[in-house]
Image 1 (cartoon, rainbow, N blue to C red):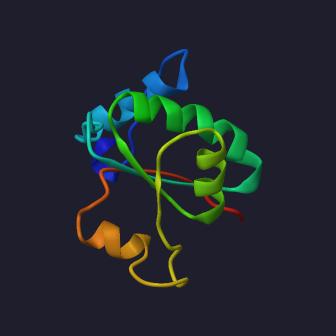
Image 2: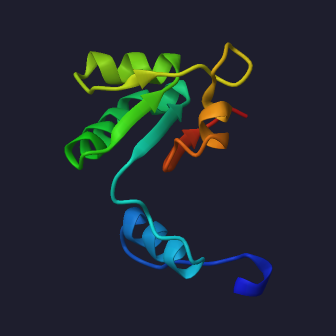
Length: 109
C-alpha cells in the first residue's frame, strides 16, 4: 500500500498505532520543537491533556483563539496564533516558514 501513499499502524493504543503508521510512511514523529494545536469546541477538554503532555516533554505550543484559551485556563503555556484569514502572520505563514514541527487539528465539518 505504500506505493499509493497509504500506511497502517496496528496497536491497542491510538498513539502507538499512529507512531507506527508515521514510521511506515517514512516520517519520524518529532521529539522536540513547536506544536500547533487547534481543536473544535467538543475537543477542548481533551486538548488540555495533550497540551500538558507536550509541555512536559519540552515542546513549545502555539494555538488558535479558543484552543489557546482552553490551554491557558488549564495553566498550559502557549502562544496564540491567528487562524488562516484572521490576521497576519497566521498559522499558514508559520507552516510555510517551517516553524511548526507537529500539527494537531480537529476541524469542524
